[in-house]
Image (cartoon, rainbow, N blue to C red; front, side, top):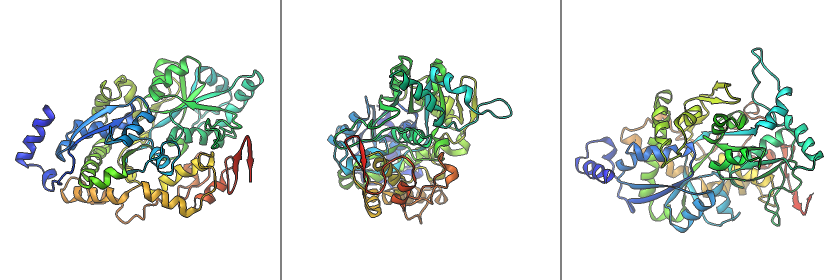
Length: 455
């Protein structure tokens, strides 16, 4: 009721710049899904700060049980859109798993994930970790330090198990990237075996984000890769130690996206623009004035309707710090980025990185041309919608023209080798050359046949 009164009052008065260019909406009552992670923040902020209201949108936000339920809800129309794993629209569009044409006109954030190990595993690797002049553990920590642990597990006939949130999640690919950079094979997929554990030295399996700490504490897994606040929760509960953030793995890597069906965008172009406008304003609010609004964002996210974790746990990473081993809190101002560095722009090169990882581990079973990667990226990532929404906001005086990459061809400049943990540069315009440069993973015409790599 409060939202209804606010929207009616604003519609009548038309007193703010946001209403100068009110779009004629095809649909104004919308339901969006999310998973309880801090990087759903743009949705919560757009709702709580009235940015959806400013666009004439009556939005309901609904937490979802897991990523599959969320994706199915968008596909069947139960949800109009959702906070999604960046790999979900891509996988659905190419027919890996559930098939549907999902697009994204808005990237939700950069960074925001971590890899946590159990206390037992941490105590096994800690003595061999290098330290700095102050006696503090040097970061980033290489996965190569896990090799003796995995060998000891193998000698006892035990699998070394790690959790990630979904087969096409950033977390799956980041965990695999970290392990492979340390010389550990995280396993392959094939059309006949979708466990992702073919020839694995570390065995990765799915655990929903909020259940990660409890699963670690129960001893079912020995570590995990997840978004916040579930790494910091392990620290606060004293059950695990985060060993690396994805900012250290790949500086300013893309994370979640806002996903809708292509059909929704085609049938509701103005509504889509209005949603993107509200989300851009929310992302800007989250990062403006050197993250001055982050404490307010923490209070919002801590509510049961959103993430529902203790404010102290959320603030541990959301406000520019990150705690590794208990008491080892360090400044990481870019752990969560929502607007800086063109974080909200849906770059084709981001999409292609996810596709290369699907190919690297066998989810895409056969080699594809560079042009195929480009075509798929352009069918899913929609910077043209994003820039149209940004243009309207600039005209309304709500954002600065200088904050958007108007002349981009949709590709970021190549990521330099020093920004990635394995020292291998990434160029989204040369996906096959990139795949060939990675020591572990499928290359060229290789494919997984049974338990063998052929080609």
